Image (cartoon, rainbow, N blue to C red; front, side, top):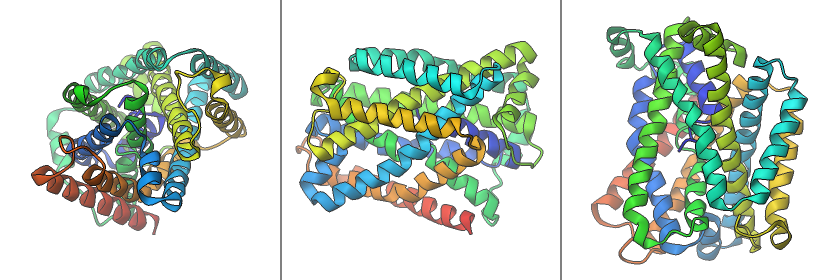
Length: 384
């Protein structure tokens, strides 16, 4: 869930606050139950079947549907990976480091971490750097915008405005993200979890969802208080001004770099692992951090190729703000397919004790239909 508060999400909510003040705060908070239902089903499928989503789709619906899912994930992960590496490049530029130096150091470091560690060691590294995101809470507190303007704007949703709908879709697509859902399922398998850990894993997921949206909302509040002039942001440096304005030039600068770097590093690890796991599911080859590189060449080869390609693209120059928002909108448009697979599989392949049924099945169906409809409508209307 720390990866859910990634560089793309940071950029999207900063853009939301700058353009629309607190008008997108309520939708972000209302996403919490939708995020939990989706993540919980992905978790349940992982613990109950010991299979990744793509492998289950391949077994249940055949090659065509599995390739479709892999294509959707590839699109989602490609946009996300470039967003994360662009965020790291922006953080490096804030320290005066050239983009190519940042990319070389980042990719080399990530390859070392991924190639030499088990899932548990990689998870510990990700959690450690991800904790820097808590700096966003401090920033929101220091911005001190006052409760009255927040409530006044947060309860007014200009759903008639196409620019608002476009950012609404982007916020949805950077909260309920296809690759984070697939990561949740595959990670539970690679961690060695089983049905006996369902209750504790659900609790961890709920805490993670609440933490994720709390951090996101804090950043939106700070951005609205310091940057909310109705004008779109064009660079990462403009987002940094919200930090320096609330925390002071030196402290704000350091915390911004740490917070953005932490979120981007966690998400980069998650994105790469998700796509590599899914490729392994579809091709039927070894795909686990518990295997050595020589025993799982397709898995580690995919990781290396993704990182190298993403780093090369970022080094060529890309607009992080526009890309991150567009990637979020793309996720929102792709989301119904992934949610549909999750729902159908949870209703059919799980053992009876974990199978989705009864009232909760109806709740999940409504939640997925609402999330999918909002994503398609807001995304399409915003693009128009």
